[in-house]
Amino acid sequence: MDIAQAIRDIEAQVGRVSPVQKFLLGTDGSVTQLLESVTGKKVVIRTLVQKVVPADRTAAGNLSIAEGDPVNYRIVEIRTEETGEVLIYALSHTPVNRLSPEFRDDLMKADIPIGRIIKQHNIEARREILNAQVIPATEETEKIFSICKNEPVLSRQYQIIAGKKPLIFIEEQFPYNRFLDTRRVVIRTPSRVHVTLIDMHGGSGRVDGGIGITLDEPGILLEAELSPVLSVKGGDASLQERIGQIATDVLQRLGAGGNVAVTIRSHYPAHVGLGSGSQLALAVARAISELHGRHLPVKELARLVGRGGTSGIGTAAFEYGGFIIDGGHRFGKGAEKTDFRPSSASREVNPPPVIARHDFPSDWKILLAIPDVPPGASGNIETDIFRNHCPVPLSDVQELSHEVLMRMLPGIAGRDLDLFGSSVNAVQGLGFKKVELSLQPPQVTGLLPVLRHAGAAGAGLSSFGPAIYAVGDTGMSTIEQAARSFMNESGGGTTLITTARNSGAVVRVA
Image 1 (cartoon, rainbow, N blue to C red):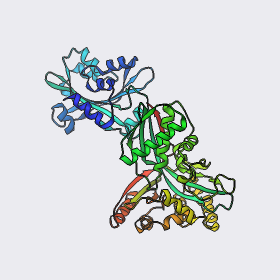
Image 2 (tube, rainbow, N blue to C red):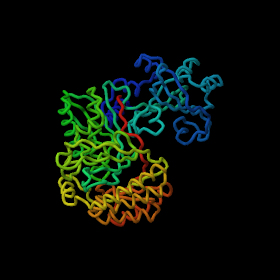
Image 3 (tube, rainbow, N blue to C red):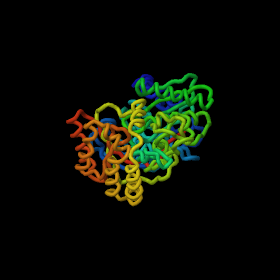
Image 4 (cartoon, one colour):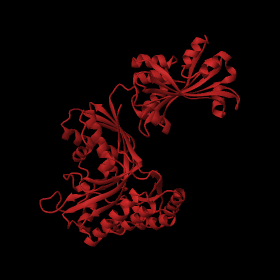
């Protein structure tokens, strides 16, 4: 294959490939020796899997053998001896019938590099590279390399040829953000369901207060590095413009010189009720502060980007994860807030304190259903809704507070799905959540009874929607199908079954 063209194709997908990465993708020599030269450390092999299996169709094609012939299947980590850092993840297939008994014995011994075995047996062999490409990290490689979900991984496949026949087929993988020659910050954020605002009456001297659930998916994955000029890659023009403005503001407020290059690897839409604005802003702020050696707490990051002025759920989800309740803000003359405003119009207000946080039960699933309708309220429209519909009746706030304290929180703490779900259902008809639902089209509100009838313990509107969430433990596929059928009849939409995330954003310096 043309390895130079393959590397150009990789760079078109993920960005610049460093010289070391090019060597690792294109070398026809010993990878372990190359790694020792690059790292200056002794490199060792750790075998994860070693067994003889019948060749499947792919393995048979790679080795020019018959399907079902025995092959030695081996998975190894190539790591530094001193620190145990995993540098390469590799799997191989070797046709047993082409091996001498001595070669096979050495191959079956754990933790011996294949190149060393070939050398010891004086085998004349050459490497023939078949391909080099970018692949998404699997759950296994995420754990092995300690990288974020959806991070790109560089992979190459090659054969070791001896006697004009493939002796071994090998695939090697390493993260794109490994062996680069620049310092990078990689961040993966969660998303969140916003269950409700608690007190939009304000008569107690406090206002707002939020309830939310941190979600593992969808999420935002971005990378950032110092750069002579500000640049943003990934996403559409609108997203790039938003990130560019956030980065410009953060750099100015930090008094940091220079610029940054930001790459968006994955993201989810704005104004659907899942909090992408807060997560994106906090991620950019964290990346820039880390690149400049400023290890700021999340609340300070939120102040930099003007988030958390009404609900603190997005900020707390980024920091802690889990099921979260915040305590709102002081309200009235001379207090933090003197009127009713959304977070987007409360940039000068500090994030509220978290007053309760619990791990969300890991065996409870969350279905997201997002109908194809216009985005939820934002900007001036959202501000006008707060102005026109607040204060809400005090009786609603009192009933909602009792609902949360005596049913929703005990449902979470006691892992009582029915109690928690019924509380979520009850909240939909109280306070500001009742206002948010009243402004939704039937394509959104009609989903709630459909999901409950299909078996969801509870279902609600997240923030201003249009995202609807449903909570359950079993039968989620049936509930998802019910959501799809309803949305297909009323204009379409998307669904996702996810889980709560009981930790905040992942921040990694590469």
